[in-house]
Length: 464
Ligand SMILES: Nc1nc2c(ncn2[C@@H]2O[C@H](COP(=O)(O)OP(=O)(O)OP(=O)(O)O)[C@@H](O)[C@H]2O)c(=O)[nH]1
Ligand SMILES: [Mg+2]
Image 1 (tube, rainbow, N blue to C red):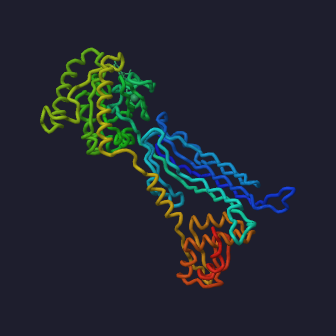
Image 2: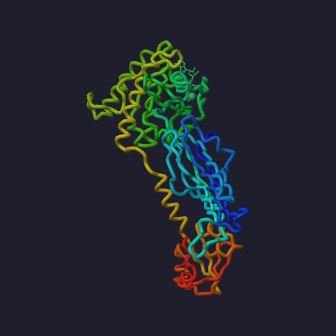
Image 3: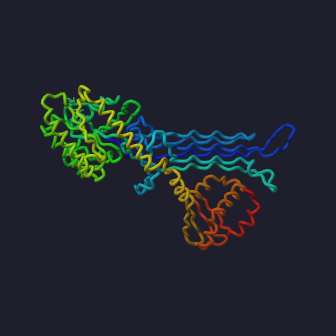
């Protein structure tokens, strides 16, 4: 089975708690506050890695957690930052949010198209601040510190779309795997029965100074565009490859077919699958020239390719055509003609890459866009009247604050209320009809409501 879509749960490390402590020295009876900050929790980061070709690593393990930050200590000793957890994924991995409850796929987080490109999928919580931060003109000895911020967590969906520069397509047993093994260090399974290749093999090919990644797609058959055979699953991978290398078996080996009709069937299946595939730049290869008696059909195919190239250029023989007018005659068995083919593919891929770079420019800021959306959603809160002067406030950020607050400590509670007010929640409650003395519930906590005005009177002096 080919694993190309997985869902994993990612959780950043929680922030370490800030420390509440005062300097104590033999000759200083009561020193100032010196509680250090908690360390930030680590992030979970996805990183594209060109040496990976599947998401198989995520098939059995689905939960990933970065390290938590350690707690702050006295003498202004800060807690250590939790280590980031870096998860390697193949280049060409598309990352979406995933909502486990509704089984729905959410926003696009990133499309990792370059080696070493990274995206943070779960942020670690910030470390709580130690009591040194809470000194004000009126509060010389703050006897509270923040707890660490809980991290963000959630499910993400990883989908791998093959990111090869050149895709080798053709009928089963045409010699696609044999060719990739001749062009690169890849050692795929090769056998004389159809559908030997079940998942694409990737190989890095070098020609002079140029290099490209080739993939052999499992054999296509008539009806592949409608789901026959194994090919359909893989046609969508070709959507992202710049160049199609169409391998035709001159011996028409499989089921005693005619190479020219094989050639037409594959062209038709690609076009039926997607119009863009019909117009995708293409190089046609005639394989197995080492087999006696293939010269005649090779010549016919060469004429046909030339004619198709001219047709694709709008009937103008001298205009550039997406189809290379030359038929590359090779033997993937003996290696004859393979170097010339490799050079042609490398040159073409290089040209296409340059053209694409001009068109789209560098670096799309997916992460930035997603972060903004996520932050907005994080700050969002809902107010639900439960009746009898009781209100529930829910939302990711406000709930994290509740978890982060030390409810045993009055000053910490005051700080929570200050945040609560700054986020405009009390105003929203008032607008919804809450009055002084009503009960506000957040998660498991319940406390009395104080209107914005009163709260300001009480907490206005806080310099936070
Ligand atoms: N004589 C000869 N045989 C070849 C050549 N290339 C491949 N073959 C043979 O053709 C058979 C199929 O080769 P593969 O490379 O497995 O073909 P494939 O296109 O990858 O096939 P699928 O993975 O099933 O789609 C094997 O027995 C190869 O040894 C060639 O140039 N000459
Ligand atoms: Mg194969």
